[in-house]
Length: 162
Image (cartoon, rainbow, N blue to C red; front, side, top):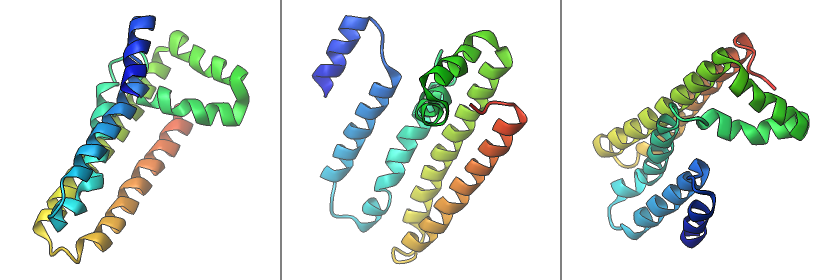
């Protein structure tokens, strides 16, 4: 995959952020799978992946295609097709409030993923090992539920839906 990424950067003269994200997840996942022995480290394995996701989402906020614009593509295509996607993406060029709202959503999801990962690490290293999986499941449901609720309310209020 890395040679393909390098060739793409060379050929197109630009970096595709979703490719960089995918490669980052593969690298972090591989490194984490090589480290074994500690049950606490196993409890935080997914946390590092979510931290990478969160940091990546936050890093895309000031770019021309923030996290939400990248991840929304598949949903928009499924809902309204490619013609609808073109209209949706045209809003990025035409509407400053749309750009601001997409950046806010990207920042919220980035913060949610990053803070969730940090809380997971904190729980894994402070609580008894046998309690962490159950608490982690509840923690994730709360974070995901909160982020999704914010996302749905915000996209309706700001007319961001495709």
